[in-house]
Image 1: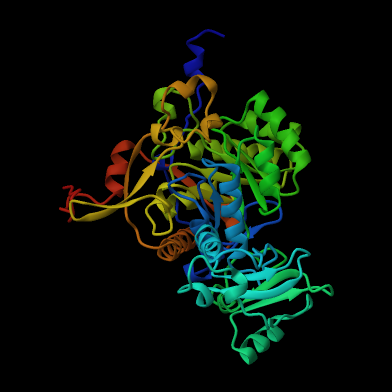
Image 2 (image 1 turned 180 degrees about the vertical axis):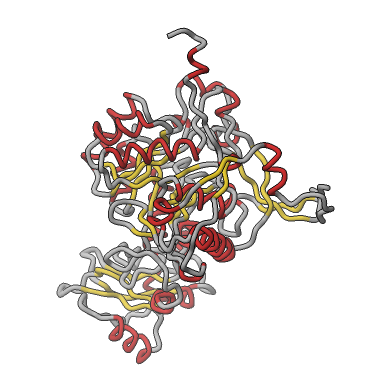
Length: 483
């Protein structure tokens, strides 16, 4: 084959901007559309939205907010193992009926020690245990907030502790908390050792978020990013998370495959691998890696990713999704597909679902919310939040996620830094995107996400066509006015 044939045989790497969903015969109204979908073999989301594992997008607050609304946040790994584990613990503690990972203190601890624990753990009450783990008291913020910092816990704690057994039901716990006018109920075993904690706050939250995704113990589902080469991190997180997501720009690599095989052998959590962008990459994942639960798809399409510019290598998310979906279908696999990158609105998600995706992973969309960890700033009368790519200089300064990109690229940046408009809370974004996605499904006539893949038809749009389908020939308000 000559070099000229490389052009003749070249694929068309289409992006979301290149296509439209064609309206079809429909028997449903948008309100009847069901947007539930799988993110792994065993975890189903109420909404097919996943936040990116980026340090300006997903920490515990984002993961909790999305899980409460039926989506999933993937904790970033650009931090120490201890810090990522602590984020996962916070997600699991957020709404558990019985908190199993109880933080306790000793009677000889000082008030100063308690204040430090309260700040680092974001906890306002602690069971007090002796050297054998037996409960001897309980201390809450009300007991020590005005106390001398040099006092001991035993000086301020409540010694007459109300406790309950491990078989306590939700209704029984409510009754005990109400009867004794207390906020926290330690759960103890026959030896009086602390085995859990029930709080009034968690009971109250239990009915607040009916669409929350939970594990078998009633705790919020949690996912976390790992490097395939960091088995220590994977094992440490495995105690707390339900899903581990490999965070590599180009996963179709022998070293990555060899490393993730060891991870798969060591952990119980389901593992999503990626990023990949071709049929061959998906084929190898499905045939060479036993037990993979999902595939993270798309290379170089993120709004702050410059990989495809710097290296001229990439696989746009829409194109990558079609490639991987064909491989998954051809091999009869039940591994899920998470489209990652370049998704800006509900229509893009609808198109991704139409070509085989199960969920959409977004960074830019969630970076502008209240729950993202990025800094909030005011610029020219508008609010923005900090947002940068994991290959940017800012992210690389932290060094923990350096191996996300190949060794040669560590000397260059494969991401940019900037600001995205502040968009409010996750609640508003989820509501807006669910409404838009259901409207798209209504146009297609698809009642469920599997029906989107079955029924949806696409049409190609020219560059001039893109201009026509966007608002045009008007003066728009705001700093980015167009005519």
